[in-house]
Image (tube, rainbow, N blue to C red):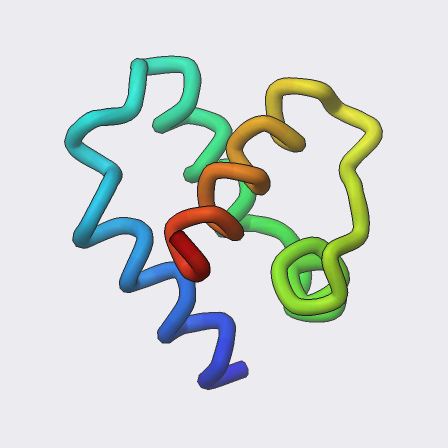
Length: 66
């Protein structure tokens, strides 16, 4: 989905280098999720049951709307 690509590329370019190793691994895991799950998390604002993943999702969402 093109919209997800734009969101994730923006975050990657702006913030990836500043992430911890654990956050980078979570970002890589996030990229493996199916598009409908990514859309639910990033566009619809659904929360993840995984607290570490949710913290990263909050960072990504915040980077889109500072």
